[in-house]
Length: 301
Image (cartoon, rainbow, N blue to C red):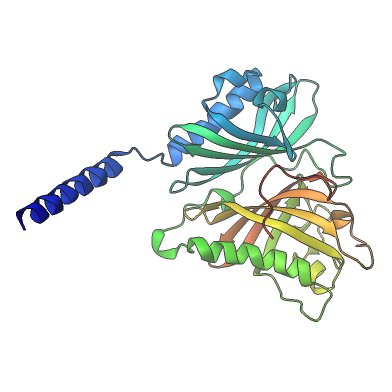
């Protein structure tokens, strides 16, 4: 009996030590995580991969190809002229959309995803798009200031949950997948929602003053014949109501999509800004990538 009590006491003491150790682990909060993003872009512009605190076996991809970090940098990157970050402090995830100005005056659209664990970066995923990499989807002058929808801090009592946010983003892909069919389900889109694709505004009030409803293309079945596959939701920012989803666009059997936006196989990162369960703003960074080429990350069916 005494031996049993001693073992129980020791087990409780060990459990308490582990609990104390877990509580003592420093949390990488929003400022900490965005600090890693700051460090990434500083290293990129300096073209100095050694300046970034990455783990020894960090997995790194650029446009689906696994590469050493130094091979994903380029000499001409001069300045970040647009950037917003989404973070998940519980999981150590960050997702960033950025526009970089290059030394020759051209611009590069960029999606950066980081995974931070134990004070180091363990995963780096980027989508890099220059003019022509996604056909006509390009406008390098429109995105200058981060919109209110993307930098909103939502009161905790009014936040959508982690899974509610994913469900709203998933509704968009479900509408994409089913548009033009009897199984069509409308996406959870606010009536005044806007969408940008490599900086080109494709919905909302456009430059010519004409309003293009974000849901209209789905409702009219314009994107029929596309297969949205390998959907991932690697960053969910509950405080800001932002979801980063990374997907593949591929052709299904049947007629080719008449839409330029969906007529090619693509690797796509989409940032969804969500308010009370509905999507109010969408930003996409896209790169033409044949279906046969992998992304470097596990396929999700």
